[in-house]
Structure formats: C-alpha cells, structure tokens
Figure 1 (cartoon, rainbow, N blue to C red):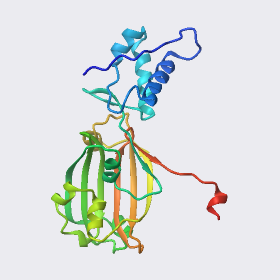
Figure 2: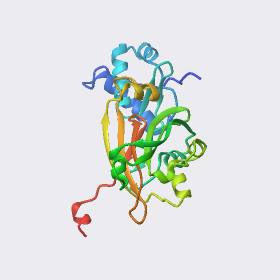
Figure 3: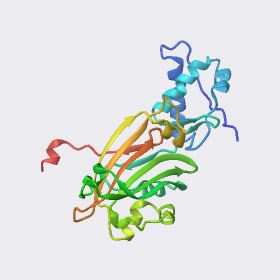
Figure 4: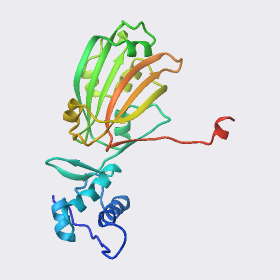
Length: 252
C-alpha cells in the first residue's frame, strides 16, 4: 500500500533551509502519530516533484531523520518509520525480553553453536582459566521480519547440552533462568562503529550506517558470572535509556 502524501508547508522566504523545514515537518508527523512505526514514507522522487524541491534537498531531509533514528532506509524497500526498541540502561534484560515488551514479532536464526571454543577474554570474564573451552552461541535476531542484531555469547562448559531448539524457542536469559542461573547484575560497554562486511550483509546495512557494539558481562545474585556477550545492534533501530542523577544523590 503506497504511503499517503503528508501535507507539507514550505516557506521559501524563510532563512531556514528547505531540507530543514521538510525534515522538521516529517519529524513532527512521526512524533504526533500521523506516521506510525512501520509506515512507509513518501519516496524522494515523489516528494521532490510534489513540493517543487530538488532531489538532493529531499535526500538530505530524509538523511536527517535517519541519523536521528526516526526512519529506516532499505534498498528495494524504501524508507519506513523506525520501530525503535528502547532498553533501560539500569536493568538486565535480554533483547528477546525487550522485543516482547513492545509487542514485536521475534524470529531467531542460529548462526553458530559450538561446544568447544577457546576465547581467553570471555573465559576470564566468566571467572575461568583463559584456555577453558566455552560454549559459543551466535544468533541473528529479527523483529517483525527485519534484522535487528547479531548476538554473540560465550557460556561456561556446564551449558554444553544447550540445543538449537532451545535457542530458537526462547531468549537466552529465559534459558539461563530455567536452569537456575538468573542474570541479575550486569556491566556493559556500548560504542558506535562501522559494521564489518559480514555484519552489513546480515543486518542489511550500507557502508554509511553504524552499528552499536555492546559488550556485556552478567552475574547472578551471588555474584557468580553467568554469561559474556559481544553483540552488534542496528544503530537506527535500537537505543539505550540511562537515568542520570546528580553526584550529590549518588553519595547519599
């Protein structure tokens, strides 16, 4: 179903650039709910012809929205309003939990399941000897059919009996909880970086896009390490919300 053209009013006598006026009005349509998550945005050629603008001007306006994470551009599909998932930075939740909380359809593809991988960084984070063989799990997580993240985890050897069926049917944290290992405490580092070629292929991104790389350690209530992960999220579809408090409150 083609997108319904939005009413856009441009003031050609204003000092505000045309691309900015267009971007602001499209952003307002998204924030007001006139454009809903998943809705298609009128394509560049149509907008340019209808509004009497050059295509580079329209492209710059759409790029502004993409940079803000408001829309997602995919070759062959067009531009759609982003279905962004927001995770609170002060809670330990899995991506499966986050997607379930906002009613997204979840699909998982198992990219790798290896029961004897040696990775000293992960082993040390898990409180094990550096050369300890670990359970390596890598999954592609899709939301409503769109690729969202590549999830890479290392687990202690006690999880050598984990099956593909278990990983496909539920989130990793649910699997850990079912075996008595509740991830309660966590530490994570988040950084933005360009995706690798393989990540671009799996997440359907371009060279101009950025991914959020999340490195996470989790432990149970007793402080015992549970899992170590190095995950890669599409930066235009995932955000982290962190509560910031004055130093005076933290010292109380």
